[in-house]
Image 1: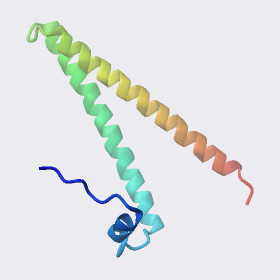
Image 2: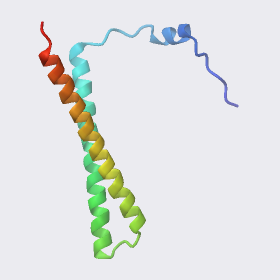
Image 3: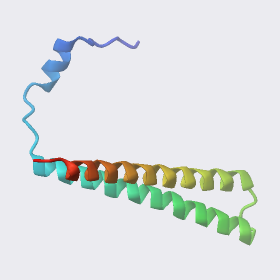
Image 4: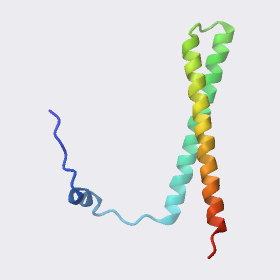
Length: 100
């Protein structure tokens, strides 16, 4: 039987107790790792879609629905990655325009 967990502020603060303040250099490394992982995932989707299309063209696969789904997933992933890149570049440019 599923039990409902305590969702009060104090319970969440108890869970955070003992965690130290993150180091700024480690935060940058985590961000870079996430970006690399995301780019790799988009690349894998593109490669899978290309492989599926090649299999369909060579007659090894006859499931056009699966090929179209993989191609659309790859396209959506790529468009999302481009939008994320655009937002990161915009944020960087905004930071660079700030007067110190």
